[in-house]
Image 1 (cartoon, rainbow, N blue to C red):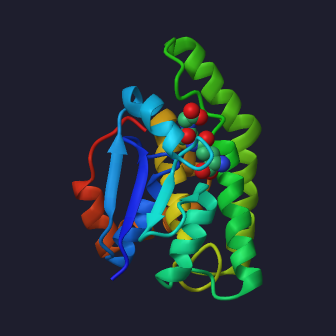
Image 2: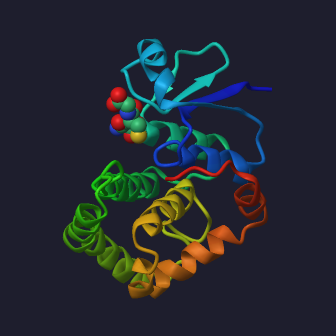
Length: 202
Ligand SMILES: N[C@@H](CCC(=O)N[C@@H](CS)C(=O)NCC(=O)O)C(=O)O
C-alpha cells in the first residue's frame, strides 16, 4: 500500500482539492496541517518553498497543486480519460485557481475587503464563470470534462466554496454550475468528508 502525506497550511484553498480527491477515492493519507507560525521552519524542507507538497512513499516530493491533483486523479481513476481531456481538465483547474487567488484573503478592513471582492468578482471571476457556464451547458455533460466526475469537478467545488466565503450568492448567476456543485457536494464520500472536516476560515 502506498503511503501518502499531504503537507499544507491548516486552511482549504490550494490544499483542499487533494484532500477532496482522497475523500472521494476513499484512500487513506496523512493530512499534515500546520499553522502560519510553523511555516519558517517548514518552508526550507519543501522543494520550492511553497505548499502544498505531496509525499509519496520515499519518492522525491511532489509540489504544485496542479501536478498533485493531476497525479492523484490519474492514480485513483478521477482523471478525464485521454491526454486531450486531461489537458482541458488542467486548463480549467488553472483558470479558476488563477482568479481565485485574486480574492482579498488577508484584508482586514471590511470596507476595503468588500471593494476588493467586488473587483475580483466583476473583473475576473464572473467572466471566467460565465464562459464555463456557457461551455458546460452547450456540452451537455454531467461533469466539467465529460460524463464522469474528475478531479477538476472537486477542485471547482472547492473554488466555489472559497468564493462563497466572500459572496454567498455569486453562483446564483450560473445555475448549471450551481447544480454541478450541489451534485458534487451530495456524493456520499464528499458529504461525509465535509461533515467532518476541520473548520478553517478559507
Ligand atoms: N503554483 C503553486 C503556488 C503555491 C503557493 O503559492 N502556495 C502558498 C499557499 S496557497 C504558499 O506556499 N505560501 C507561503 C509562501 O509563499 O511563503 C501551487 O499551485 O501549488
